[in-house]
Amino acid sequence: MTDPTETSPPGSPDSYDPSRMIGNVTDPPTTLVWYRRPWVLATGVVLVVLIACVLVDLPHNTSTSEDTKAETSLMNQINSDVAPCVYAVQESFTIYADLKAGSLTSGDRVRVPALLRDDQTACSFTSQPIYDLSSMQPTGTDAGKSVGQVDSQVTTWATSDALAAIEDIQNITTGSGTAAAAGDLAKQQHLLASDRAHALVQLQTAERLLGNAHLPPLNLPSLPPLPAN
Image (cartoon, rainbow, N blue to C red; front, side):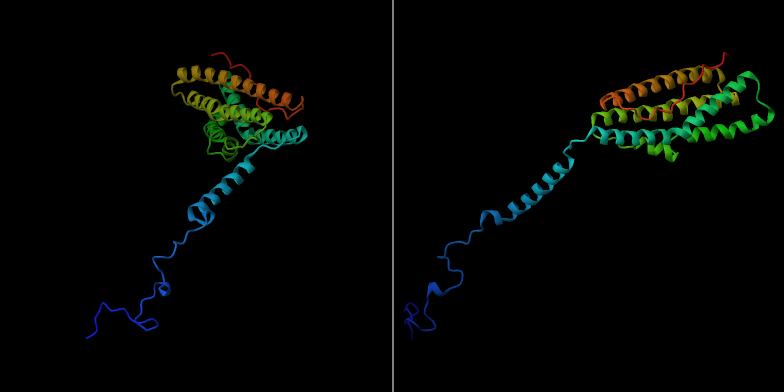
């Protein structure tokens, strides 16, 4: 019987040679180079993306002529978007003045409800031009920020002041809460004038920042005084 404690002669199949074993525990552990570790690679990718985003967002030097051209385009867009509401406000206030003057014919009175509904729609967010007006993106320059304030004031002029004024006129023409509606109409007309004035100040500020350039004038009407009750 062979003694299990005996060592097999060198070179025999049963000999134990640690140097020939795969994964010998005596071998030094395999260590990844630090820059090849997964967490380093993942962090590097994130940093590259962040740096790219920052570089894209960094302001670049915009010439006055380039800025003037950009702000001119935005002012033209503001005027274009608010134009249907401007027409609606003027029409509804004309209807109110004619109603107070007693100059509406029976045929006019029949058409008034539909006209005022159309006017109301023209100044609400359901109107595509008003939606475009409210979602306009100003440029990042100082002049662009002022034109952005013009856009904000014009949006308020249309969707808050003008819309409320048209609703007051609707109530007055139907005899629904006439006294309260007339009082609120006077308030809304004051707000229309105030928002227009603020928008004009911002436009003037933008022109000054552009070296006293001339941007397109703001096409918001100066409404006449309301007829006496």
